[in-house]
Amino acid sequence: MLTIFTITLNFNYMTLKTLLISILLFMKSGAIYDFKVDGVDGGKINFADYKGKKILIVNTASMCGNTPQYAELEKLYKKYEKNLVIIGFPANNFGSQEPGTNAEIHEFCTKKYAVTFPMAAKISVKGDDIHPIYKWLLAESKAKHLEPSEVQWNFQKYLLDEKGNLVAVFSPKTQPLSPEVTAAIEKKY
Image 1 (cartoon, helix red, strand yellow):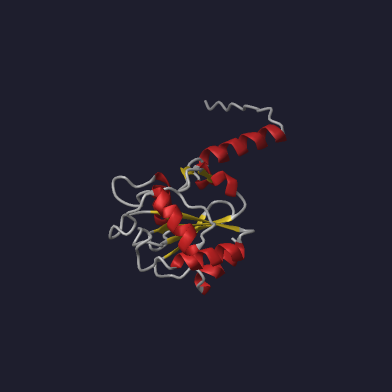
Image 2: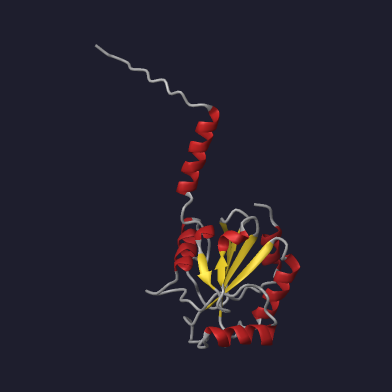
């Protein structure tokens, strides 16, 4: 004999909506907006402050052939600052091209390139001591089959849309003001 039980749940629309939102927020944990990092100037950078803006994350170095990209990054930041934030992450992983202290990096960026976009404290972007934000970026780029999926060199760029989704990765040689980068910034995702 087959017995069928019917359970009637007494959910109203708002309860169901609240439940679904809670589930979605739980599933989205580990998002870019969960990160808070130290700034090169001693302050804090809270990624939650940038909800609704595109975010361009760049690993930087002061003694690299790509270092002049700081000037283009600053121009890009000024051009799109209503809808874009650029966050530089100094790293000494490639050719020991960022040997300075946070104070030295801050002085270099502000005096030589007049950088006004947020700069994080020096971190590692690969290896055993990789910073959690770069672990997240690499996992996202691999999951989304975005190339390059590993950090190749200084000034690799990661673009996130207004919802915090990784949407593009640009090689270190891709100039910040290139049509490829500006088109991705202007694109509606």
